Length: 59
Image (cartoon, rainbow, N blue to C red):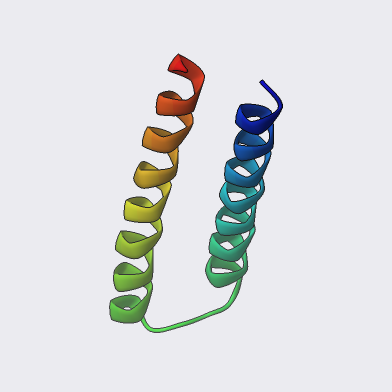
């Protein structure tokens, strides 16, 4: 029980970290191409994290 809660906290922390990082990027004025690549990367990492969260919730 304790271990799963700990893992959830780590996942949640990394999830918020990525969200903040993405917001920072959006606030900065950058080239569209660069933004698109970063957005794709962000979406992929976001997807992977949500998959992890769901797998931990099942346990």
